[in-house]
Image 1: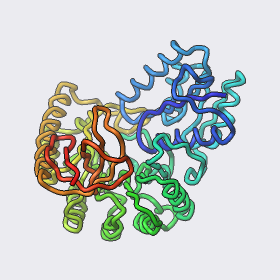
Image 2: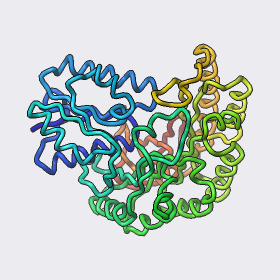
Image 3: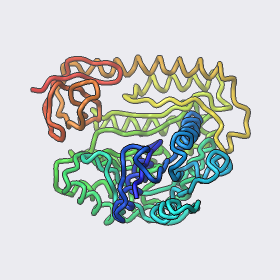
Length: 424
């Protein structure tokens, strides 16, 4: 049996696909790289944003048109969030719920044999430690928990992923140790909210990081998205964990809005001042740290004053990475009961923020010219050269290097999105 898996969405969803591939491979299924070579096609969906929803639906339609002789299975968040729309889009497809990952083989075998099996619902599978087929042999994704404690009014992902379930430290540590022994050079810690880790079990993310960094080996640990609310009360311990030489000096901490009024409407559970204090502490203790944040432009109650507050916050903290989304209603969310603001207004605000983003990122990167960094080479560039990451996770292109090696480079050029360096 030959299976093709196509993945949309976040690092966690990529981890789900790698587990599905690993479970199938363990039972002698062949994972193929092209849909035309497969007997069964799995589309692992993301549903967090409206544009992604459209991409997923378009892809499901095209796959059925082009590969109507193949068996089709849909997995991921769409299965739980919008089953009616999915059923209309692919009435004969099998389903694998995002928290029913261990059912992968059963659903695939059933669909292969002509039945349309659908297994959904919020199970309690522990994903850490499951068989995994890495799509990049040098990068290992490890899921540390699933679900979250949040109640953000705009988020539909929580309905798909459910309540927080943290996985045992010893299972996570064993998975990382095996990956490092198999020469993985980058370990990506992922969850819907990595800072929520252990809030259901009494453990903490800083404790987990410190356990992982006791593993011998020359690797880098990238910590995934952290909700500001989940960091509160634990900032100093987290900073201490980030100081370890094997941890990328990079923190992804989404704010979503620079207005306290909007944060309250979003039910984010923290204030702008609390967010800024977290950022200030990290920058004070780890001066070279890179900051990534997310902004939602045009939340239904956002005024011009609220948006100006967001611009002022970004000017103040000068992040190194900014992810911008225009607000659109998502299924089942509280905010979807409110009227969306005029889309022309939203477009104008988004452009203003993007312009500011480009300016700040360009200036931040220009300040790197002349600096020397240790670089971890992670891949060959699609347009030539080799790509590496600095200790602060900034992307650097060099002419020639060995993938998986650490090299010293001097930064010669900079754009708003990457740096160019020469090896010393």
